[in-house]
Length: 231
Image (cartoon, rainbow, N blue to C red):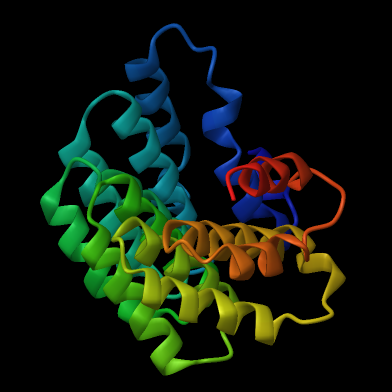
């Protein structure tokens, strides 16, 4: 009833808050069943149906019903292919379900959201699938070289792959694109630290010092000091 009376613009967020409200439920299976019944009238709704199915999927996953969760995610995405919530949960399911990984990869072709694609690359890294993460980010920067955050992620992945040349080029491209952007100070320093580490690994102390000298006071100052001590 609360959903019925809520402003249309707030219903999606209200639905997505349901799992948090039920975190303390002692009987999660029963809570999931009650939630599914409560959302029944909204499961075919073009505006919030995708969120409703995502919530049901989330609660099924919490009950270790991974197959049921994946089916719910698919139904949500089919109802409204423009909503990202089912895709985000599908990414989490992909950690343990190869079929979900294939589905996510296919579904992402319908989205141009940089955050979504970079989030998928990070999950692939956490899954140990570095080559796939690298390919995902290479496709992003080839499609849109101005997607500057993708260069940062690409550099990190390529460093993990011991591709120092690729990582160096990606990070330097990121620094070039974000020059003078104060809100990106933290991310710029991540790139500078990575470049300094590469230079140290390659015994190029002068180049390492060049990168480290650009890191000011703040949370990365101690890391910069530690790297400088190894030169």
